[in-house]
Length: 236
Image (cartoon, rainbow, N blue to C red; front, side):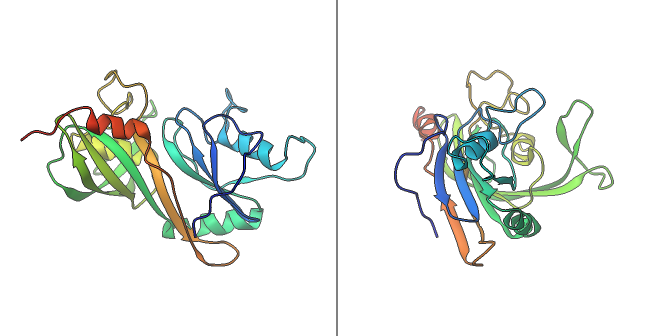
């Protein structure tokens, strides 16, 4: 089940694309730099605000609304799922552990293994930095599977399977094996010269909250990622 709607959509900011829509769910491709949901400092320039504006078709008094199911980091691009009813929201969240999510990441260097699974307990300190800990009382179990799709002299393109959904999980795990994500100023090499985080939510699959059918949505590989892994020649 992968349906792209036809036509142009008004009331959507540049870069935000609707991938699929029906009476229960709406899937969007979020650009990097956009929050999924609002904060105390920013409430309007978010995917949630934009999609709400879209379903209301510009009418602020409309009763049409959407519900947040999950979120992506501001710096991460890719698929975000919203629900159109509260019932659909609760169904998707209650079955979230069965949802399959795949990401693409471009990391610095070459990985020691062509594929692997990183497992640790993740905890967050007072500075809001997430890190691995051996103390299961302080952290939450997190598992990240990856495989190398392409290697160049400087970078590796990885497909990442998010087995659990912890805060900053992919970014922390890849940094801790010595392959931080390009453009990650929080867990990577600081100011590495790349303005955007090379992390993209590529695809998602789940059971539809009404029909029970398996849904699968995917996006295109960002051109930015392609340019990174073709900008340097492979060794050998």
